[in-house]
Length: 247
Image 1 (spheres, helix red, strand yellow):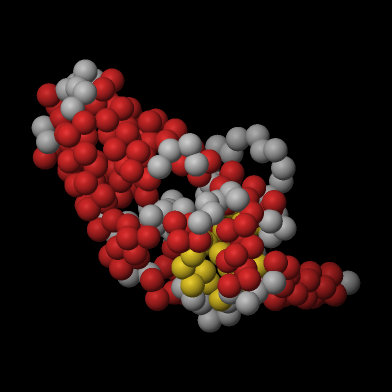
Image 2 (cartoon, rainbow, N blue to C red):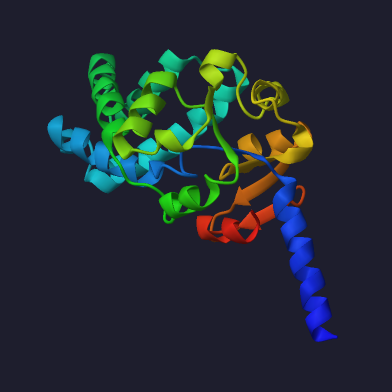
C-alpha cells in the first residue's frame, strides 16, 4: 500500500511539473545579487569621492543610501518620480542629510555608480545551478523594472544572458511591475498561456502581487524572516535551490 501511495504522489508531482512551460524571472536580487554588488560599488564611490568628509564612516553612508533608495524605488513604479530623479535623488538625499547639498557631486557619484555597479558579477546562491536545471525543459524569460542599458550590462558581465528566451523591460513596454499589463504583455509576447506560466521573484508587491493580479501563478523567493502577507503565494521558497522541487 505504501508503494502505491508513493507512486501516486510521484505521478502527482510529475503532472504538476509539466503544468508550467514558461518561467518569468525577476532579475535583481532574484538571480543577480543586487545587494552584494551594490554594496561593493558604493564602497568604491565612497572611497573615490572621499565621502568620509561628510559621513562618520561608510556604514552611515550605506544605511542612509539604502533606506532612501528603497523609498525612491517604491515611488518609481507608481510614476511619482522619473528615472532621472531617482538616479540623482538617491545620492543627493543622503548627502543632504550629512550637511552637503552639492547637486553636482550627487550627479557625479550617480554617474560613476551606474557605470560601476552593473559590472559586478555576484549572483544569488545556486542561480546557475537552477538555470542549468531548468533550461532543457522550460522557456525562461526575464521580466524586470530595471533600466535597459544597466540590465544588459549586468547580464553580459555575469554571463547568464544566454539562458533566457526573452527579456522584457518595463522601460520599453511602458508599464512597470506590479501593473498587470506588463505581465499580460510578456505572456502574450511569449506565445504562452497564463495557465502554463509562473512568475519567480523576491519582491512581494512587484513580482508576486502583480502576477497574482494578472492571473499568473507565483514563486515567492522570500526573505529569511518572512513578514505577514496579505495572501498566500502559489509557492514560497527561501532558496533558489528549493525551486527544483517545484519545477
